[in-house]
Length: 318
Ligand code: ADP
Image (cartoon, rainbow, N blue to C red; front, side):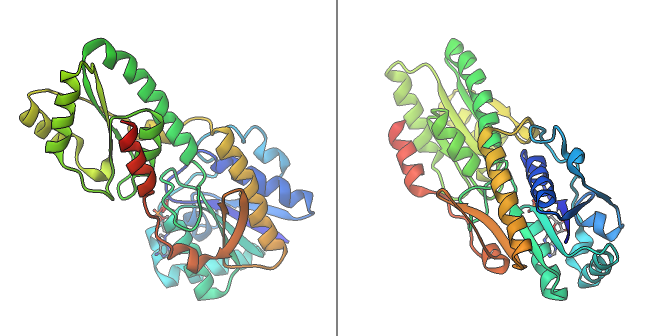
């Protein structure tokens, strides 16, 4: 068989490890792989290259994606997906493995619905915002990147009696904030899913200062509110000017962690097995220690919920 692979949407550390996993495992089973460049755009432009074992040498530890990624708004139109189907046929491809987030999965699902072409989705997004799987590739690395930054900030916070606000990624989903906040010992974690009361935060900070606490760390997901506005309001209410740090794209980069590499390898195998066993229209994922695949339409309709137990527990710890 000839399997095509692409990476699409926001890049995530571990995408390369997933591509490598697909290539090496498919080759070991006697099949061929080609890679389309820049997500769905590469299919529309017929921009592909054969991927052999050496194409993915030294890729397991590289962040980003060597196949590159792009948004491809045209793919929302059926006419474009039909063109993509013609290109896949012309390239003699039997199935497509798409690595990316929710949008990428919707594109794959629509391609399948329009044409019946077998597609498999491998979840990779730093936000960990796909409800059907416990983890997406890239999340663990992003959280560890945030933790490294928090460690650095803590050193300087303690030296100066400071309130520090760290803004992390997560427009709709507070998972990076929650995971990095709890493991970085943040005093407050602000996420888009759970409203917060700034007066209460100010009271708690002042109380803690009266008891001799020297510093407070607030981890704010970008979707929970604008960091600058939060800090202005905080200063007005408390008279204390917080330090602000926006981590931005630093969170996305760097060599993937062990957990992301292993997840990428295992999900790659699950995806190739779907192709080889004739299951199209699937999303692969992990529950606990089990790797599984399920209908991609069902997968995209499962909304991710914030872990409120963990959130409440984090409050108890602080
Ligand atoms: P992510 O995969 O990280 O969520 P996007 O939401 O940007 O990233 O989606 C990546 C690409 O997937 C889009 O640029 C587009 O080509 C395709 N896509 C997204 N949503 C749809 C949709 N509803 N129908 C078809 N294609 C889509």
